[in-house]
Length: 447
Ligand SMILES: CO[C@H](O)c1c[n+]2c([nH]1)[C@H](O)[C@@H](O)[C@H](O)[C@H]2CO
Image (tube, helix red, strand yellow):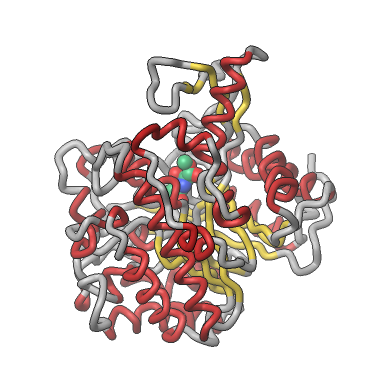
């Protein structure tokens, strides 16, 4: 049953991808290896030993992929730039062929009336910078700002929507706390330093943008609403720690100029004392916030799970995706309204929302994915409810355009609106792509 939902006339409908997950050709035309190019080669780091060496071959097939986006009726495309194509050493002399790739991609998008939304950094750091300590090195903020400034100048006038970082929390938590992403560290000492330098880099990039960028600039964060497993005080305290660690750790400094108090409790003596000037820099005002939403978590107190001492409680009766994430559309609405209540009326984009399900193989050029259609339907309804209740929501980007390299899960998880046969690189739009095209054409009426 469809609902007649009215989204704002200027609501932006798009899809999202990232460079390392779709491009392939990681060393082509002067590009240098990224940290993910190297991390994939660490035995056991990625399921089935998959790498982004080919991925969706987008680096070579980009023109056809733009045509595919046009056919799907997309109005915007969120993608990231591979820093190691632009500055193979991470800093210094730009690689013109790397710049040309993104100039051509952006020009093709604009020529097809598809608005480019550019993410400057979606986790793939040049290994030269990783070897200098990566985000744990205080200079990383300046390396990032210089790279950002180069991109602002290169794409000036062609790109109106920029975001600095994709999910700094994942870079910190997966890369420096739990070692499951590059640089593969488990360091209570380096994790908060890396998080802080990510935020400093964001602030310096925003300052560079204000100096001579045109358009709007924002930040993309992943938000996962936390629910207490019981009404008891221990679970309430565990919820507060988990919420501060994942949802407030980056937004409080950016919008409120201070870190949550819970972080000093979580990191203990490893929690650094940050200079006041740093927090002033991090608070450089931004024009919009991107929110990546996939699921929620229910948490309980767990003294054995240091340093957070909070553990998720499986919601066995609920529907889950192939990522073992609970399908929980209400969490999207609560995220959007929580941001407005806590941080004010900042324009918001849902910059990622989607699901991996065990799709069948395409048959006669078609692929039925009813569970993904339902996931999008229920989450778009939740987004609309948030809009009706005052969320300043400006757009929605489905994750993802195509099945792609899902980080440590390799190619074993498929999020795409479009199926990719990795042996032939054949693209087959799924039923969810047809559903989304109708949503876009009707501006949300056909949900
Ligand atoms: C922890 O979930 C995050 O919000 C999240 C989920 N996802 C992401 N972040 C990343 O931005 C994408 O690169 C992933 O491919 C995508 C799907 O896993």
